[in-house]
Amino acid sequence: MSNKLIDIIDITKSYDENVILDKLNLYIRENEFLTLLGPSGCGKTTLLRILGGFETPDSGNIIFDGKNINTLPPNRRQLNTVFQKYALFSHMSIAENIAFGLKIKGKSKGYIRDKIHYALKLVNLEGYGDRSPDSLSGGQQQRIAIARAIVNEPKVLLLDEPLGALDLKLRQDMQYELIRLKNELGITFVYVTHDQEEALTMSDTIVVMNQGYIQQIGTPEDIYNEPQNAFVADFIGDSNIIAATMLEDKVVRMLGAVWKCVDVGFGHNRPVDAVIRPEDIDLVKPGEGVIDGIVTNLIFKGVHYEMEVLANNYELLVHSTDMFPVGTEVGIKVDPFDIQIMKKPESEDEEAPAVEE
Image 1 (cartoon, rainbow, N blue to C red):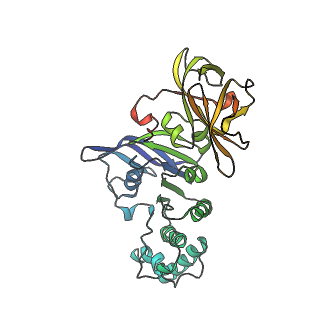
Image 2: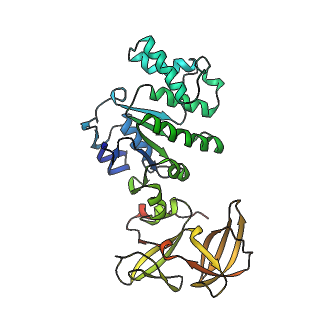
Image 3: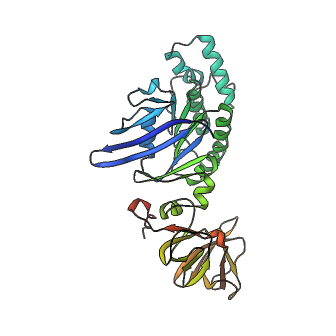
């Protein structure tokens, strides 16, 4: 396990009466790709700006490599930020954009020339030094913004929704590009996004946030397969979140039937939420599952069919490569390992967001 590089301790930040971060604690390891994931207004960008030195916390401490950097200005921190809007200087060439920070630091012409060559090669844009930013595509401009950041040899690269302005195909290509860059540079990436696919694709660690609080920290696999509350289950991918009763260890009642699961430690006859991912529901012949239902809606999604199945007054969302026409009666089976049991939400930030009609 890598060493702890950044320790965020009891960070609180408010604007007027609005609390954005409330005694938040988190640590970030060396060479880690950590993603802050959450909806707009959850506090992820504020936290990134505090790390970068663009905002000051009301209370708490940021410890970087063993030293408190609360009062250290952005230009003296070993962190560089890449913004969504690139912030390239249109009146400068690509080479001049990349060299900007190095010139301010008083580096020699030879050093700057070598760094420009290295950075352009790293982002696969060799030979682009004399061109202007306006002549580049959005993806190329984003890579130049990254090149400008990495020539300063930061220990940490902060990325604030850097792919948000790109179209879908380019965004997917840049995801792989960022993974490659992180591995080649061997530095820490702290990435902010509201896009669950981006977080699942690129991250070593995901920090899910809502209303200024951390909801869960884990690997992409942990976050997706083992959500700790209704908010995480609903925000990360599609989910069926079902009110249930934990009868005893490994036995849960839901949808009017008793199901086997693998969770323990929730007590006896305790109200819980059960989470079942749509792809984990098997549709079989009526009578061959735990309960029966009827297909009420069908959409072809390309790689699978998306169906709604009405079972005991609950609309289950189902993803399957097999197609069942609307009106078909089906049996419903779920492997015990695919039923995730969660405690009922204890606060508003842990609840699944309400769906507006």
